[in-house]
Each structure stands twice: as C-alpha cells, then as structure tokens.
Amino acid sequence: MSWTAFLFFALAAVVLWGGGAWAAWKGRTTAATISTSAGVLVFFAFIIGLWATLERPPLRTMGETRLWYSLFLPLAGLLVYRRWRYKWILSFSTLLATVFVCVNIFKPEIHSKTLMPALQSPWFAPHVIVYMFAYALLGAATVMAVYLLFFKKGEPSRDEEDITDNLVNVGLAFMTVGMLFGALWAKEAWGHYWSWDPKETWAAITWFAYLCYIHYRLLPSHRKRWALAWLVFAFILLQVCWWGINYLPSAQGTSIHTYGA
Image (tube, rainbow, N blue to C red; front, side, top):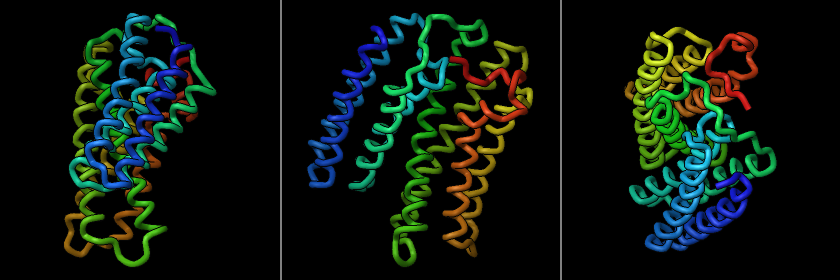
C-alpha cells in the first residue's frame, strides 16, 4: 500500500472517531464504542498495509511514529471511556489524533524501505509501539491536568483526581515496559543495555519526572495544584524526549536515536 492512500484511510478513520465522540456526548455507549473501534481498525489497516509495502514496521521516521500516536490516542480514549464513562475523553482523543493526522497529510516524510541494521532488531518495533501507547495515555492525563488547573472552578473532585492518577499510573507502566524493550534492543544492536546517549538521558529524566508525580501524590500533605503543575512540566519533558531531542546541540551528529527522514 502506497502513502498516497493515507488520505482516504485517515479521513474515514477521523469521521468514525468523530461519530464515536458525538455518540459519547449523547450517552450512546454502544454506538460510541462501535464507531471508535471501527475508526481504529480502519487506521490500523493502513498501517498494516504500509508495513507490508515497506517490508518493515513503519517506525523509522517521525512521520511514521506519528501514525502510531494517531492510532493509540483514540484507542486509549476508548479504554478510558469504557472504564470510567468520561464523555469528554473521546472528543479529546479525536481532536488530538486529527492534529497528528493533518501534520502527516500536509508534511509527509519519506517512507522508504531502507532500514539501518540497528533498527532490524525484533525488539525495535515493540519498544516504539509500547512507548507510543504510553505517550497517548500521558497526553490524556496532561489535558486533564490543564483543565483542572486553568478551566475548572474550585477544587478538583476526587473522581477527577482519580482519572488523572490512573492515566499516569498506566502510562508510566507502559513507559517502563517500553524502556525495558529499548534496553534489550540496545544490547542486541550495540552490545550494551544503556549508554547515556542524549535520547536515553532524556528518557530517564522523563521517567523519573512521572515517578516523582506518583510519589508526591501519595504524600498526605501534598498540594493538588502543585501536583497538576508538575504533571504539565513532566509532559514538556516528554516532548523534549520524543522529538525535541532532534534539535538539541548535544544530539547533533552524536545521538543514535535522532530520526532521519
């Protein structure tokens, strides 16, 4: 499947995700689940088709990783919606996934079959895929934190705090698994589990930032707004780890993790 087909699959998926978000606001749980799930399947079908065409997992460029982020955002939103029935979560996941879809439509990157030897490890694909799912969950937690900090009047309710904490807990769990997969990949590709490459350093910083949030929330005397502000800060660190590292002077010509086009 060529990249030119992306527009048609993406439009179909976004329409289905939008239908799911609308059904969620109307309280139609079954319709929301079916529509969102159908959109996920349509988008995943394109990824599988592209995978077959490239003869490798589409995970090499930033554009390819955005495909997985666009896929996992509605999936994470659906899981949260099914568990806690938050009507807004599918609207958020649809909006954010659409933004990433539009970036890939208007700024496509080269999707060649070429894959450097280090990326041919069987650990590479699960490492990136698990990380993308973790990023989707932590992105949802950040949106919740921004809402509670700047838009909600009064103190956040216990339910709102719980959803934020649950998203962070699950997101950090997936991030930890992704980091372990990454260590196994590094051992096979370069002979060592960890080398304090700029990307690895920022991954560790991000991981500790979310761990600090979880432990701070467990303190009886913690301040809610400080915790939410820290969560927003941790997401900024995550963005540096994900794509900002490409623009840091310390990574130019040295980091083995910077994405090529």
